[in-house]
Length: 247
Image (cartoon, rainbow, N blue to C red; front, side, top):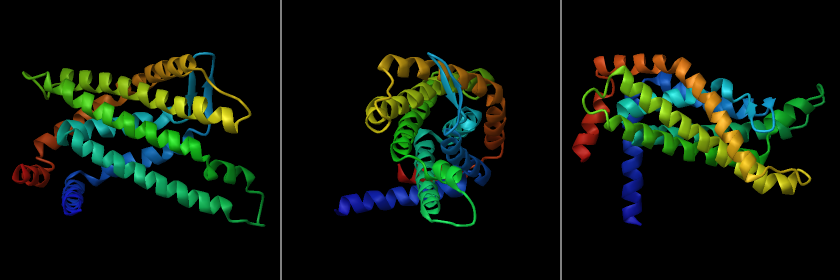
C-alpha cells in the first residue's frame, strides 16, 4: 500500500506543478470544449449510409488542438493528465445536469431540457471511454512523429505532420470506439433492436475523422503560433525543472 500511496502522491504533485505551468486559458478552453462536445453530440447534423456527423464536430477540433499544443510543448504524459482532468470535470458536470433534470418543476414544461441534459448513461460511458482512448493515441502518436523531425522539430512542417496524422488517427478511434460501444453493444438492448454493424461503425468513423481533419487543418496554424510563443517565452519552466529533478 505504501508504494501505491507514494505513487499517487507523486502523481498529485506533478499534476499540481503542471497545472501551474500550463496557461490557464488553454486548460479552460480544453475542458469547456470537452463538455460542449458531450452536449452537442445530442444533435445529428448529417446522417447518410456511410457517414454520420453530430454537433460535436463543431468544437472537437478545439479539444484536439489543445491536446496537440500541450503535447508539443509539455509532452504526451502532460497532455494525458489534462485529458483525464477534462474527462473528470465533464463527468461531474453531467452528474450535476442529471440531478437538475431529475428535480421536478411546475414552472413550465422542461421535457426537452431534461432529455438533453439528463443524458443517456451508456452514451456518456461510450463517449468517455472513446475520448480517453483517443487522447492517449493522439498524444502518443503526435509525440512519436515529432521525434522523427530531428533536424527541425519546431518547424511548421513538423507541427503540421504530427498534428494532422495524430488527429486523423485519434479521431478515427474516438468515433469507432464510441460507435462500437453505443450502437453495437447497448443500442440493440435499449433502443428496440436498433444497431449498427461493425462495417458501418468503421465507415462512419473513417468519414467522420476525415471531416474532423479538415477542421484541424483550418485551425492548426493557431496551435502552431501558440507553441511558438510558449517556446519563446519559456512557458512551463517550473514544470520542466521539477521533472528534471525527479528523473
